[in-house]
Amino acid sequence: MSPVQKDIDRPLGQNASAAPKVSDDFTVRAGTVMAAVAVVAIVASASAIAFREKPFRNPAPVVVSTPQVTEPAKTSEVARIAPPSRPKADGPSIIHVSPPDGSAGNVVVIRDASAVGQNLRVAHLPDKDLIEESETGPLPIRAVDGRRPFDVYARPWSGARGARVAIVIGGLGLSQTGTQRAIGKLPPEVTLAFAPHGNSIGRWMQEGRREGHEIVMQVPLEPFDYPNVNPGRNTLTVAASAAENLKNLRWALSRTTNYSGVMNYMGARFVADPAAMEPIMAELGKRGLLYLDDGSSARSLAPELAVKDGVPFVAGDGIIDAVGDRETILKKLDQLESIARAKGFAIGTGSAFDVTVDAVAQWVGEAQRRGIEIVPVSAVATDPEKG
Image (cartoon, rainbow, N blue to C red):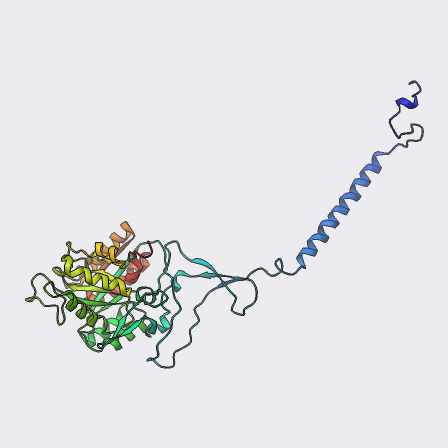
């Protein structure tokens, strides 16, 4: 028997004789009740949150943007196009804009990179903010908000990092039947280059843009054996003054509108002369135009001057129809594919001969099935203003 416990040794507040014994069964039942109460409390809290107002019940909706276009009433009407942004190589971008109904909050818009550039449904209509009127016709200029013809008149493309090939077919406008055939048969991803000496260029430009083609203007430049080989009227020459060459350049630029840039027509001597070439590149930079070098002259100063004057630039990897034979042209196109797989992209140039048009139309479909993306020339240009 244990000794009698004195009051001073007893725990504070306890009465040994009165303390009841708590059974194990009672402890288990009490714990079960407490757990059930906790579960009810959690369910009640979750229900309260679920039926609350924003932000829990009404998160910002995700909307895939689709360009909204009002059909033009007349083909002569001038379209005002919202300023586009150039695509990034890493795919679609996400931007935040205000909801169209003006309600509070933001809408997250996922914008497909292929929507970049002028909407193809109105691509044949010039943007009046990009036009300077002249005696010979409309001249391209930068808009007051900074938009360039290079940006606005670019054909949309995916923005993907895969192998890309740009094909530019020149001489459009010289033959009416040949021009019609080229526009009708060439895939819309192929870029068209118009000769300034052609006929009905404005009409053919609109037709080409309606079919989805990007357009560049050809500018006749002096070759080494000029005038025995003559690019045509208003050729820019090394012997002419800068003012005269600029006048001839502006004549070529005013032949039509809605093009993203220019490319040389011949010009091996001119592009190698810094005094002749520099004012031309400065003018293109001021007007916001791309310069495409067909790659026929290794002495061209265009790459260096383009960086200096802020001109988007691209150089061709080869002329595909220097030999006008179908099989030879197809082999040249296959070489472009090999270059594109090696370095990411390639550019080929040619003329609107029937054999060239037929070969390109066949090859493009085959290349696309092999995973090659056919892109407009603007998609592979280096843009000094974008870094």
